[in-house]
Image (spheres, rainbow, N blue to C red):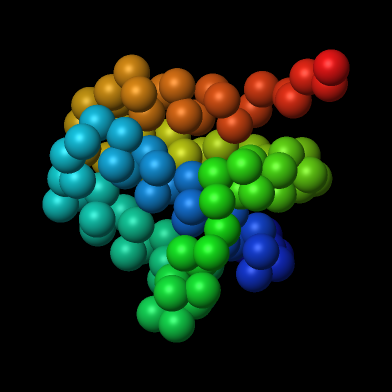
Length: 106
């Protein structure tokens, strides 16, 4: 199991929530997958309340600062969430792809 900080866990769950909501339908299999991730990451109900303070930009930044090994693990979580309901919606793919696009400086 990869060791993640609480901030990294919050970032992962923030993006997983986006993926889960991307097609406008929260499928029971997506909820079940999210519960599995909470258990795997050791996230509690009180943690979930604290996570509400993290926005998408912060989450993306935290994920992009992770080491490559962690990024690969996170990518697998994101893809599994997108596939959980048996159909990968284009909006889900867009969210996942957007995470890995490096920010361009002006």
